[in-house]
Image (cartoon, rainbow, N blue to C red):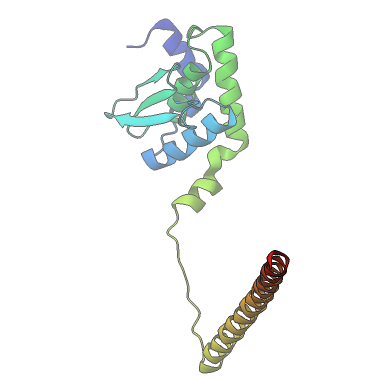
Length: 185
């Protein structure tokens, strides 16, 4: 079924190929890994991820930073496809290939594949709105009224200054006009 390098890879990373994750978790993991290792598309800022079929397989396009995974992928499959994004010219099963796979897996393993983060992101959001008493409502209304008054006072001060400047300008223009009329007369 697998080529020679595939059997060897599945042997080396058996623990990770046996651990399957749902699509939602896979998306979180791929997003985090692509951002961390800077494997993102320069135009979109993320790696494009899509899902197909149920057989444990995938494809990656290093030039466009696209990854295609099967539904319910294993952690090994995710690491394998992201290894393609590092460099499209490395050969499966080579030392460089295995080093990159270990680099991805060790980083993710150190973070426990973000179990807490995934649980936090996928947990339903519960919003509790506090019940306000009549006094709390009155205090809020009083505070809003005070803010309005302060805002209006600032506007009054601003427009008073504008008005006084306009009046000075007008009086100066009238004086100049009067002087000009006296000189011509």
